[in-house]
Image (cartoon, rainbow, N blue to C red; front, side, top):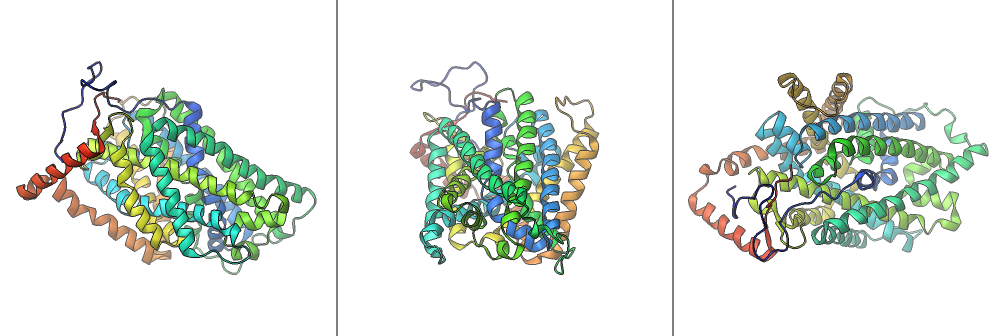
Amino acid sequence: MEGIDAEPAGHGQKASPGKTEAVHLKRSIGLLSATSFIIGTVVGSGIFIAPKGVLKNSGSVGLSLVVWTLCGVLSLFGALCYAELGTTFKKSGGHYMYLLETLGPLPAFLRIWAEFIFIRPAVASYVSLAFGRYVVEPFFTPCSAPDALVKLVSILGVTFVVAVNSWSVTLASRTQVALTFVKMFALVLIIGPGIMALAQGRTENFQGAFISDSATLTNLPLAFYSGLYAFGGWFYLNFVTEEVINPTRNIPLAIIISMVLVTIFYVLVNVAYYAIMSADELLMSEAVAVTFADRAIPSLASVVPILVSVSCLGALNGGFFGTSRMMFAGARESHWPTLFSMIHIRRQTPMPAVLLLYPLSVITIARGEIFQLINFSSFSRWFFIALATLGLLVHRYRYPQHPRPFKVPLAVVATFTLVCMFIVGLSLYSDPWNTGRSCALTLTGVPVYYLTVHRQRLPARFLRAFEFCSRQLQILLEVARQEVQTY
């Protein structure tokens, strides 16, 4: 899209008259904030919802624990690959930017198109629906909470997160750090009673842990999708590279520290679940953490839903914080309307990109069902992650002398890429309806790419109308293009 404001100034250029400082996204994320950002985004609703999906599709307690461990290792491999990508390419935008730099503009556009059309709405919906359920459920126990009320509270949660991210980058960052400490306390609160139960000899639920009549190879990809969904979020720091202080050092360190911690905590949480609950009880539970608390720590049972809902809110906050930067980067590269590359002139937030994600998220919440949303969004999400790491291999081959401050062993990159491709391919067979819809929606971006990025195919009258609307929105939102180059 054509720019609707003056070109951004280079380093050292003075801000426009009437503004106290140049409009740009500042480097304000240090190592603690970066680590909290990853942990806070990864540890959301997943560990409180996904155990049911992992157990259901793996078929046994033992195999489910193996799946959780392998998901942690696979996520760590992927995170290390993204650490190399994030230190090789200094622009924000994550998946989108890496596909643009390594495989070209069409795959990059399809990634941002899929994120806007269904990945972000689906991810925001299943996290916010978990938030709504854990907020509302305690007031209706032992009955089920009304779906309409759950969805209303979920929409309020998304609205709060959008407001925080539109208001202040610093506020969103500090909120993430605070929520991360709360959610880690929630995990410790679950792990403690589970370890005590094991120490007292309560190991009956682990007897015959690998015996199952329902385990099938075709369902395993769906078990991995549920597990990987719980680990999802390790890549969001790469969306905000330009806002990380000393990214060459802090991105790899934050990724390694956070993913090792999360993997250890997740496996221990699942062990704790099975120490207190049988496999059948876990499968019947609508809110696993609440059921666990009722059995293990009745005196604190009322606190656990609050901690889980806070955990979900942290994941929502991190997701919107990161994804808005992908939209921002896409607009800056002329793959998205230029309005979304603009920043509020006083609050220094990418307000249009944040607000863009809100309407479809609300619509998806109103219609969504959690496990269908997981399978629906996971196909395209993991397919593009595999493409990004494949692009890393291609870039290494084409430009062997390109500076790489952090370089991952070739075996790690190849293993991660092949496993992702295998899971994605097999999931088309396991759940053809949801994955097929995901694939079809992604491909709708192809004609959109040729109509909008190559704008000469559009009527001049339409372009003038679009330009006029963009200018009016720019004035209304009080936003301008970035005036300082930050990469």
